[in-house]
Length: 345
Image (cartoon, rainbow, N blue to C red; front, top):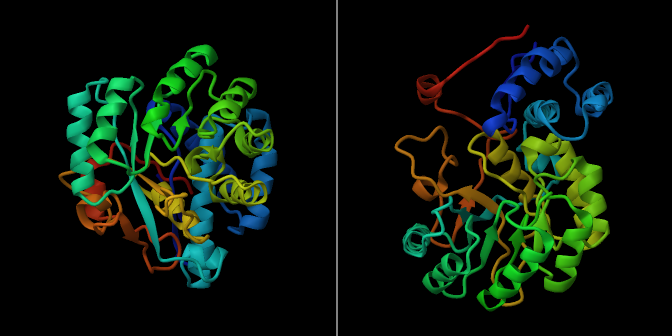
């Protein structure tokens, strides 16, 4: 997480993708990207294009780009705070205050009994759409039996080559999967994804495409039925808004990848609220905000785990009304679990 303080006393929050790249993303923030912004104006319109140009030699994805994503989120938070409105209202007046969440379950080692147990728990907590991280028909079928006709998706984390993917997805057809996420390696293989999507019309990806240009190119070439950019990777809110516009132009739903818990989660939620809800053929709402289905003894902020505090029985969550992102972490929890900090000034 990144916190930017301005000379007029405002604080903006951002979040970069880390996971196993945490040390590299941290180094990029501390030594390369963070120092670039010290003393600069906070306006998005000038600061981010200058930074993207300065760092373009590092590529369109990877730790430097993740670091830029965090800064971008924090700067948007500051701009909306300065305007004294929520981020969604700052970008698109008249935006929604409520969105639909879906449960993103962790991997249960392809065990049908574990999958069934956890998906039923998620359903009992109010979720009405579910994403698995399993890749066998037995495990996925167990979820389908447990949740009935509710929307079901799978993220197989690049499990197959194109031929194996085609065989596996064909075997899933009776399970009525809304999307199959990142079915092949490499995850942005345009030819492989396009052939699968032409056949099955339910392929999704975007988290690991190379920046805005790479993802929009894939969308334009009919590679994807669902685009899934990740706000902490692709370039922050600025980049997400460009993908959003491409989705509207091309008629492709943009459903953010969101295995986040802090400012990036709220950024994804605010972006989803910019547009009216979309509905599937049967009238069911299109799944919107991905919520990692993890049970926490303590939570950092109200939407950290909405299934434990802030979600109704129809899978809907209310977004914060505070200016900006609305990220207001519990200072005691933050301090208790803090691993490392650095102050740049």
